[in-house]
Each structure stands twice: as structure tokens, then as C-alpha cells.
Length: 140
Image (cartoon, rainbow, N blue to C red; front, top):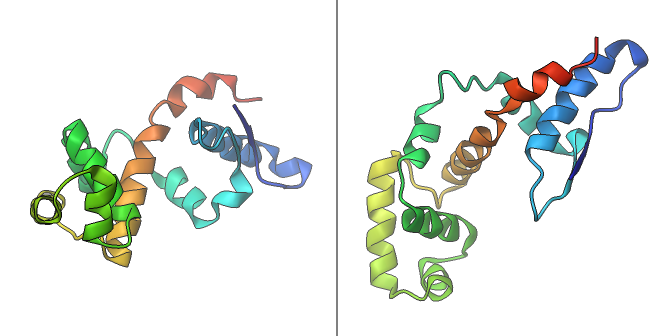
């Protein structure tokens, strides 16, 4: 896994380092290299995140069971309830019922544009919680 900080002048190297640490936390099997510059406005969101006081959206996702997380992710990524049901191997009415339950649990509809953004942010932010462990590697 590798990450890259933002391109800055030498005097701003510590900020680039912080951005590179965030990018590193966002690497995974699907994205083994992350450039902090590519994060755009998401980098600001990540920098502002306080894992000691997680947002309700983060807590709501953390409270879901594995199957609900899978259904939610598929609902967010799918074009329709029917295509989500096909991907999950479930009946569309079952997926619709789960969708309605998820709306109640989350407090928003994850299939709307704003709901997708909230889901993506809430799924991304917990990946940053180990930043404090990496802070001791920070250059002087």
C-alpha cells in the first residue's frame, strides 16, 4: 500500500505529510495507492473528523449488522431496487422493505444524492481512527 501527500512548497511539507497519512488510511485492496490530491474536498472532511466525537451517521453505520451493511452498500451502488435485489440474490420486495428500515435507522434515504454522500462519508471516516497511532511517525 502506498500514499502520496499533496504537492506543496517545502515550507508546507508537514501539511503534505498529514495528507499522505490520511491517504494511506484510505488505501485498501481496491485502491492500493491513494494520492491525497485526488481526494479533493474529501480531504477537508477527513482532516476535520474527530474520532472521539463521531457523527451520528458514523455511529448509525457502526450499529448495523454485516448483512445490513451489505444491503446498504448495494442499494447505494445500484441503479434501482430491482438491480440491487438481483445483485443481492433477494426478492425486490424484500430489498424494498430493508431499504425502508435502513431509512428509519439512518435518518436519511441512502438512494438520494445527498444520502449517498452521507453514506460515503460515514463509511470513509472510521477508516481514519488509527491516525493517532501513526502520528508518532510525523517528521519534526
